[in-house]
Length: 220
Image 1 (spheres, one colour):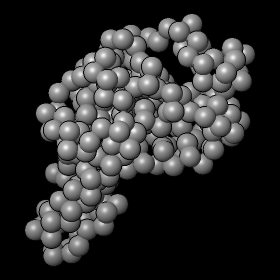
Image 2 (cartoon, rainbow, N blue to C red; image 1 turned 180 degrees about the vertical axis):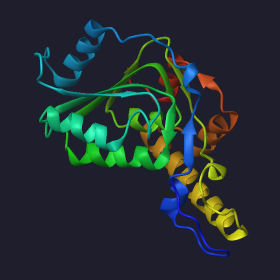
Image 3 (tube, helix red, strand yellow; image 1 turned 120 degrees about the vertical axis):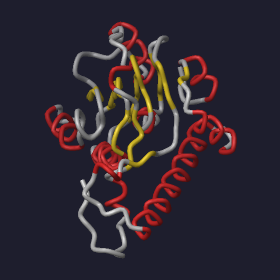
Image 4 (spheres, rainbow, N blue to C red; image 1 turned 90 degrees about the vertical axis):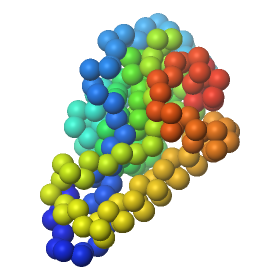
């Protein structure tokens, strides 16, 4: 999770990222299951025809990213489906999690070179799970899904890093850069002004599917 640093030593971006989390307590997740018939209709719209069984790949992001869902588990799931070049459906019910783990999962999905990506959210799609949701060109959700957008937080006290002034300054720089990247990504995907998005993220409030659709995070 992080290495111990000698007094006054610097701190790598990687060491900070493993301590960056954007998540919500898991007990907020809802148990609603996606309706398969509805999901297939949306996949049909994505593909341009009614899907036959197994003509698209699927991965499920269920639970905390970095613990319940890892880059390795996603990689194995894609390999098992021979998913390279196929349309990909990502189903999400997650409270978010590790920023570095989320980046690794995105890299694994990019490496699979899916022909197209569609994402479906139900229950909860919070924090870093929103980053995965935005991978989809087609993005939809259960009407009762709860969403949360917010900036990064740090759990440096949970690591073996020594919290020197140098470590804290580096951590602050990395967190600021990550927040800036977040706003840029969200703005590019939704076409919402970064200043408006920043106000929403600072509020750290739950949002419903209708609001997320109005903001452009959902396309259906």
